[in-house]
Amino acid sequence: MKLLKNYDIDISELNLGQHEFHFQVDDKFFELFDYSLLDHGNLFVHVLLDKKISFISMNFSVSGDIELVCDRSLDQFEYHLEGEHEMVLKYGEEAQELSDEADMIPYNTQRINVAKYIYEFISVDIPMKKLHPRFSDETVEDQIIYSSSDGLEETTTTDPRWSELKKLKKKE
Image (tube, rainbow, N blue to C red; front, side):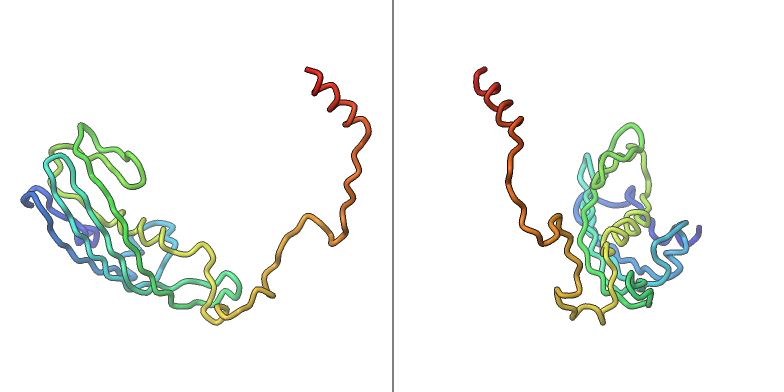
């Protein structure tokens, strides 16, 4: 848990205005989170914090490489990750999550830990479909396209009962 303290920002010491912070994310960082999607990576996180009277706005810039496992071949590969995210911390009576981009923190909060935000932003930036770079040149021929028709031409014959029901509908 000592490592988590490396991601603390002492907001009580900050004056109103903008402040910059830099964090390094490596394999030890991912070990801090149970059931982490990632085990290996080397990323750089730049945080631009803007402290206001009633809230704190933080812009996160994440850049670096992570190790992913290909969904198709199960081979490991390096993936370059780039992301920009914003988080707003509003002052209130108690700590609570307001939305994906906003949290409420108590008025007397001395410091905030940005580790969970960094982890969430990295996780969100991981692509849904993880393909090894050697599969990036594949053409559309390799994709399976689902269709409801079997290549047979459909005939549009209407059941006579439906036409009788349509007549009733028109009378109303």
